Length: 456
Image (cartoon, rainbow, N blue to C red; front, side):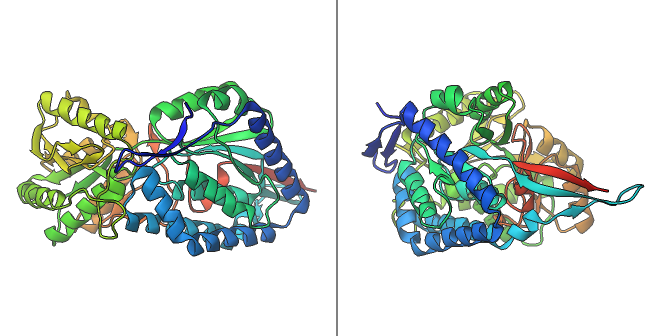
C-alpha cells in the first residue's frame, strides 16, 4: 500500500492515493536538482531568481482558494486558517524576492594588519533535501525553499505522506516561474529511499527536517554518517508566563489564541501556562471558559475555529496522553474527550514533575496550567523542559520583561503578544527543539558557503 494518501480527517474517507517514487524516479530528481544548481551558478543573475520567487508569491495569491481547499481536505485545517497560511507563504516568497541583494551582499572584514582587502560572500552549496511536515503544508515549504532558492541552492522536497496534492501544487507553481527545470522537485520518496539513496548521494549537500524529535534524530544520524549539514526544526512545549496584567480578559484571549492556533498543532504554540499566584484562580476560570467555548466543527466552514486533528491516529495519541496524565494525578478541569479526529478543548492542572505530561508535548487543543509564586519560580518552571522553541511573557513591568526574556531558555521570546510570526523574524529553537533558524536573513546562512575572499 502506498505511503502517500489523502485521508480527510473530518470524515475518515480516503480521497486519493499516489504511488511512492521508484528508485529511478529518485535518481532523476537528484540529477535534475544538481543540474539546475549548475545552471543557476552559471547564470549568476540573482535578480532572475528574485523575479521567479515573486512569481511564486503571485501564484499563491491568485490560487489561494484552490490551495486552501486542498489542505483543508488533506489535514483538516479550518478554511480561514488555510487561506491565512497561503497568504503567509506568499509573503515569505515575496520577502526573499525583495532581499536577494541583502542575502548576497559582500560583508567586508576590517583587517588587523597588512594591505589589501578581505570579505565574506554567501554562496550556494548545491542541491538540498527538504523533509516537510503536514501541519503547515505551504508555510513550512516556503520558509525552507524561499531563502535557499534566493541564495542559489536547489530543492528536492519530500513532503508529508498525507500531503501529496498540496506538494504537487507547489511544484506546479514553481515550474511556471522561469527557474531552470529541477530547481524545485517534488518527490514522493519512502523513508528507506531517503536514508539509503538520497542522503548518501554526493550531489545532495544538505538536509532540512521539520518534524518530530524522532524523525529529526533519525535523519540527523544518517546525515552525520555522510558528513552532510542538517538543519532541524522539531517540537516545542512553549511556556506562556503570566506575571502581571492590566487587562486579564485580553491576556486570556491571547492565551487561547496561542494555544488553539492551527487546532493546537503548532510547534511554537503556547502549551504550558505558568501563572503568578495572585492571578491564577481568575485566569484559570476565564481561560477554561474561553477554551471550552471553542467547539470542534466542520473545517470547510468559514467560521470554524477548531477543526479535527490531522488524522485519527493523531487524535488517538493525544487522547492517550490526556488519559495517562489524569491516571498519574493530573486534574481534568475540562474536556478530555474526542469524537473521531475531533478533540474537545482540554485543560489540565496539578501536573507534577513525576507525571509523563510534565515532559511531553501535547500536539492538539490541550493546555496545562501551573501556579507559581513569583518571577524566579516562573522562569525555573519555564526552563524545566527538554524543549526550547518559543515562549511568551506577559507583564506590565518592562524591566521584568527584559529580565525574564534574558533568562528564558528558548530560541524566541514574545513579550505581551502572540501569533506575531513574520517573514523578517528568525524562527528556531534550542535544546531538543532544533539546531537552526528559518525566516529572516539568518535563514540564508544555514546552507551557505561563507566564502572568504582575501586580496593583496
